[in-house]
Length: 178
View 1 (cartoon, one colour):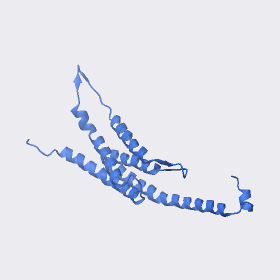
View 2 (cartoon, helix red, strand yellow; view 1 turned 30 degrees about the vertical axis):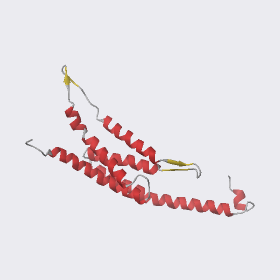
View 3 (cartoon, one colour; view 1 turned 45 degrees about the vertical axis):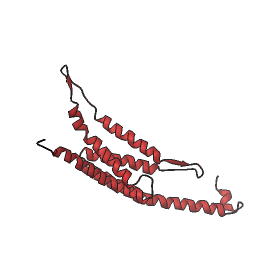
View 4 (cartoon, rainbow, N blue to C red; view 1 turned 90 degrees about the vertical axis):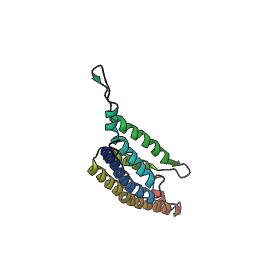
């Protein structure tokens, strides 16, 4: 009981906190867009990913077993596989097919959850510049490209409405393939 504070664990805790802060930025954008997986979900996913990656090294050290002169090896990639599997499960829950309108919703949120996990993995591996850069690129994509996409959708909906309003014998209606 001589050393109650393990500074290496505090460092890992800081990694998780950084990942959660970066996940929060992505989650805020999703929250602002009124999506099902928002602020808390993205924070928890990024934090969980960073935690699981950060635990890789202590886990290997803890279970480092030598038997008959050979060391049992572990595969750290399995940690990332577990993260991806868990996040994919969450992402699948956000995807909804609305048959009445013929649209699929939630794909971007599912993808943002996966990317948020990737940010957490970056932080867990102490790749802070990469994690921050990916967060910024993600925000640019979600918000900036989202605005462009909304403009395109609005324009195509206006064209569809105009087409519906024209009489069937109007030249522009007859010349358009259906």
